[in-house]
Image (cartoon, rainbow, N blue to C red; front, side, top):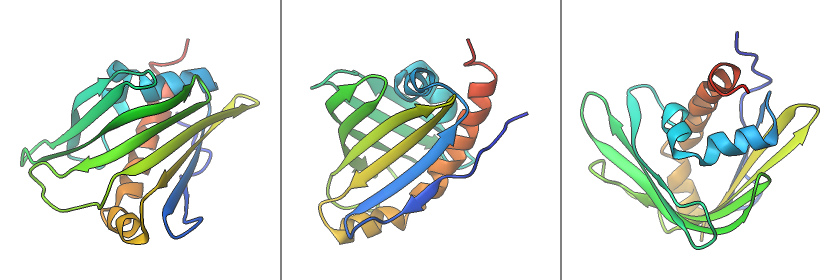
Length: 169
C-alpha cells in the first residue's frame, strides 16, 4: 500500500518562479535515479491520465541534453520539453534549461526557463524540490495555466507506487 506523506506543495516565491516540494519514502540516490534514468522515467513521469511518455532521451552530464515527449493515448496529440544540463551534483542537485515544445497541441508556455531540482534526504525520506524560474511573470503564468503542477502531482503519485514496488533494492 502506498504511503503518501502529503501531496506536492506549490508556491510562488516571487513573480518569476514556481516552487514545487514533495516528499518520498526513499533514499535520495533512489529518487535521483528514478528522476534521471530514462528506463525508469517512462514508467512514472506520465502526467495526467490518458497520456504516456513516448520519448525520453537523457544525456546526464553537464553540457548534455534531454528531450521528453508525451502522447495522448486516444487522440495521439503530443507535446514535450527539451533542454541542456547546466549543473549536476548526483544525487543531490540538477540544474537544467527547460523549453516547451507544443507539438501538435499548439499553445505557448513562454520563453525558456531554468529548473533547479534538489534531493534532500532525512531519516529515509527524500524531499524533492523543483524551482522553475521563468524569464518573466507572463511566461510563468502561461506555464501555470496549463495545469502543469497537477500533472506533476499525478506523476509523483505514480512514483510513490513505483518506489514501493519495483524500485526497492
